[in-house]
Length: 223
Image (cartoon, rainbow, N blue to C red):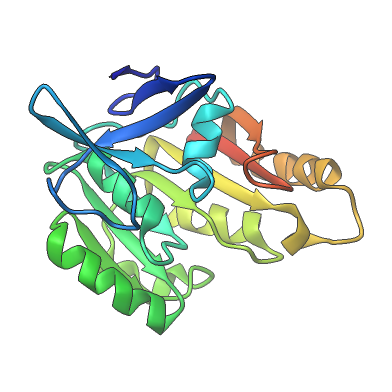
């Protein structure tokens, strides 16, 4: 096990394949059936890049995901908590994750996760309407969004404007097919780039094939 180039993310070679890990905030507990590995008294959780666009972006070479120990993160599109749980590991006990999703069934699952991970709180809400949960979220160091809607970039920028600190980081996982199935994914990614770079500085972007087909991760910083 060795440090990766990303803060609080570790890696291990398995033959020709590199596997990612985060240090388990809740030792002995799995979230989605992932492998647990203990080395020198420290327990790590394997981070499945086929189930996490953020892990896929790291394996595709992203040099910086903008998240560090102690950060506060607004996670939009938290689903059942696979990637948010690794974000929870990264920011640690002194950090915090606001995990928002629109689906009541999913948020119920998040509640169970948050019972074990005290640095996450679930929020039932519509990311397209940040004013409806503004009383539940403080200014954050990182906004992360993984929501498959036609106006993904609009929702993303709304939340960055409402909650992201100056010089904070913002990550957007774009699903091209949710925006326009008639255009090639690279055309969609370029269109999204032009919209978000009007308000944010894009420091990196990674097309996530073959791990996530027709997806691109944009990593940005607030001006």
